[in-house]
Image 1 (cartoon, rainbow, N blue to C red):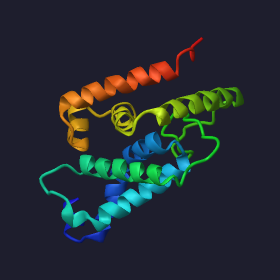
Image 2: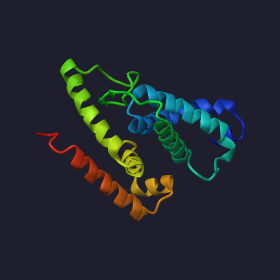
Image 3: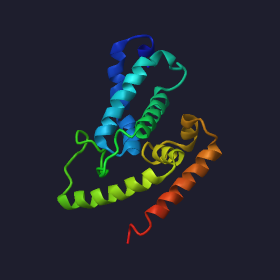
Image 4: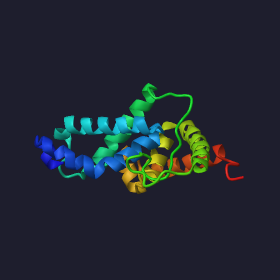
Length: 178
């Protein structure tokens, strides 16, 4: 990141290799569409490249890129560019065929599609802040302290927001296991 902020264009490749999977998971958690998530990853790294001079050299690049990804995914979601009648399920792995180890069975895909649609609908129904905190905690596996820093929120607010998100999802997904 230091090389990129100093104007070294060749530093973008290694930065992308190191962080693209995490950025992809963040984008997918918000957008719920693998193609939109891949587009968001590209746009996140374009924004990082264009704004590299604004990076605080004392900070780690990971949280900085995560914040760009979160902001971009929220903006993209708000613009409504990806509104569709159906949503692709989230399958095992990093959700991109490029990363998948093997193809699931047709039965598994049908179950995953139904489950993915229900979870996607429940996630989209959450308020934006709850969705952001939940996605960072459970899709990006961030600590509560990291989430507080990324979203510029007090730790107590992050904890209560995550709690409300989980309660909301439980309520919306009640009866799913039966």
